[in-house]
Length: 516
Image 1 (tube, rainbow, N blue to C red):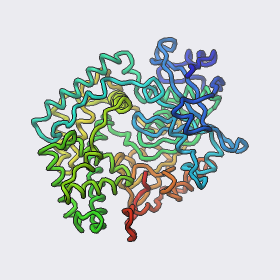
Image 2: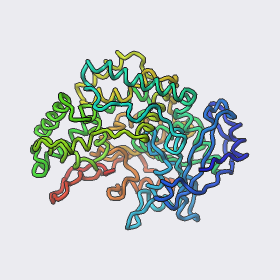
Image 3: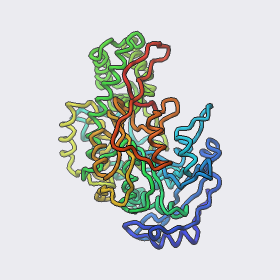
Image 4: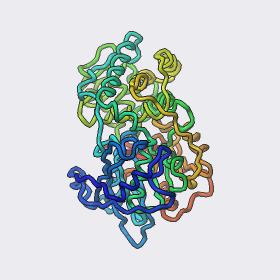
């Protein structure tokens, strides 16, 4: 992939400052020339074009070390109706947008796309892999096999010293390998990079669609570059309020995931004829608890309590995995066959997985302060543990931040100044970004309109996979992005029905969010 650094882009670099303007307000700067994409993108998304942009690693040293960013573009389907560029971020931190815009625009066999057709007519979709992510100078800290499997029992007091040692070692390795890079990977610099791309596209303003972590990145961009956002849609809303933002987010997640597990167990009970785990939630809960206790007491190969909890945690983000996990649980409880659970939960070390771990830590550890005293972490986990089986395992997933080798910044306070009125989406039972935190983001953005998907627990609402798209969300999102029409006030839309196990004719009556 060629690296693009035009004279115009060099001038933009010279204009950068810590607060983060790439060019004077409203200035246009042509310069980005799109061409062929990397092979992994080009083969799947033939309409996609790409370019590589050079930006400063450190914006206080604009002529210093540069890093490469991959930017993809899906051009407007109807240039006569084009109104601008829509930047997309799928979340993470660490999600790559270059591929994701292709997913949002690719039609199925009926010609249906995840983003509404009129949105695809109105915008060029822009996908920037953030710095340190996928095609944009990706980082890694250790060999993929660094984490041994199974990990110790996450809840056991005797395991705590080992977890602090392992994650402390991970942080130390990141510092040794990436000492000059780590201080510059936070959300503020991702927002600065976005503005460089905006200027390179020749746009006075950008529109933005952000999911999960992207719901924080979008407002951060607005705070650093007031007046440069046209329309903004945020989905799966991060709580921007706590000073120790990402630290507190983990403790908020754990009870929300536990509630989602309860919903899953209640769903299993509706189909006792399929799974044979009981016809009441008390029975299915007992089956799950016995299984967790078994794996806690005696790990099965590479899968102990830590790995099993992690697999269940991830499955609760959407209902697409509910049936498979329920069958795996059934096979173990009823037949003693653990292969399904091993297939579900066994860690698979990979370079991509380690890169995802590295950038997730690099961003969250840098974005806001973390406690330095392990006793504080352990006391906070102990408070949450009575309400969630995930309190301790979720704590350990962020433990590298306690001794992270780059100093944390103060989190960006979201005020909404300089941002247009935003359209917000949220499900009531989102396990990743709980509803209480979403209300804090709504309060932080004056004039924003919040659309809640009722009785739903999927993470994110708008532009869902085609088979389970929420038509109300699609209509509301398109009205705003294309026509600038916001609903008259906050409102709610019906959720989707729970999935029905394969071969089952009975339909569930409980609404739930779309399947991812």
